Amino acid sequence: MDYIPVIDLKGVVDKCVEVENGVLSIPKSDVPTWHRVAAEIRKALNGIGFMYLKNHGIGPEVISSAFGASETFFKLPVATKSKYKKNPEISSHGWVQPGQELLHPNSVFELRECFDVAGNERFYPTPDEHTNFGEVMEKLENEGKRLMKKLLKLLGLSLELEDTDYFIKCSRHLDSDRNDPQNTITNECDLRAIYYPAIPNDLQVPTGTVRCAQHTDYEILTLLFQDDVGGLEVNDVNGKWIPATPISNTILVNTGDLLQFWTNGYYPATLHRVVIPEKEIGRKMGRYSFAYFFAPDDNTPIFPLRSNFIPISDTGRAAEEESERQPITAYQHIMERVKSAYQY
Ligand SMILES: O=C(O)CCC(=O)C(=O)O
Ligand SMILES: [Fe+2]
Figure (cartoon, rainbow, N blue to C red):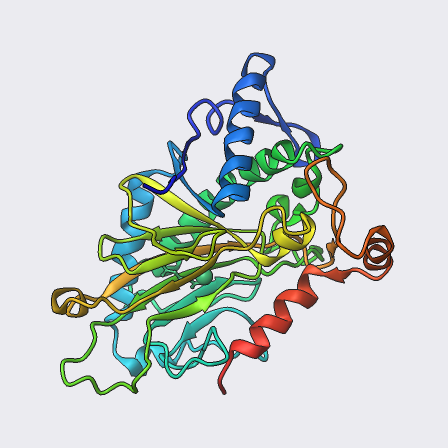
């Protein structure tokens, strides 16, 4: 049996406090717990490349309302959803219609639609179209942010960085007000509601269609909330596809490209996909999920960090120093990938 890490955040998410500049302060008596959990996270992310979190502190009612609101949204007529369509040239927010996005260059068709909650300019269906879609989505987003700050601290501890608050300090947007006109901190975080429709009986979709082609996410970490339908698979560090079976009351966490760059591959980005179920019963069911893609501030430079765990690249320190001199920013990397995924 494969080792499937389920990390228990009890005693971690509930008691720490925020101090100046949004940095977390851990009560002395809890420090050993944080270090133990950080070591488990290191083993999971370096050893298999993903993890489940339990006792993560996000209220079950927040998650179930989000699933309810998402289902109502995706059932709206296409004409209504089209009013809220995303225009990737302008922003990352809005409805992504089926076929608008391909996550792999060889993809034929990916049968899903999404609604992205992202950026500072947001719009949602009017109350007579949907009573509370925006409100419910942003509630889940806020809870995701709260949890994420703790995960960023745990990541810093897990790598034994000299400054264990490094990742938090690169994510000042966590504590900035997106409605403040003076706010200049931008970021590419995205809470994405996803709907995979049932596969039509008379399979009117091209051969080779999948729900979500294999890809890595572009950011630091992704929180994944899935229903019970299944189909998500992750590629472990040995290249084997393993079903990421939903485990009740847990969230699945994948690592993204930015974390892979920062750690020089010590925490590789999780390759994953969503397959169409082979059994007829599974094909008849639509699937709903949420992904919260967490990115640092746009201007964050990305180069390998120094830590006893992070390897120096094969080409040696000189290549690393070069990338430190001319680092790509988080924004540049994410935009490259976004552009290549969109089908206009
Ligand atoms: O729906 C899922 O479970 C995964 C979605 C995903 O990987 C993505 O949107 O990047
Ligand atoms: Fe993904």
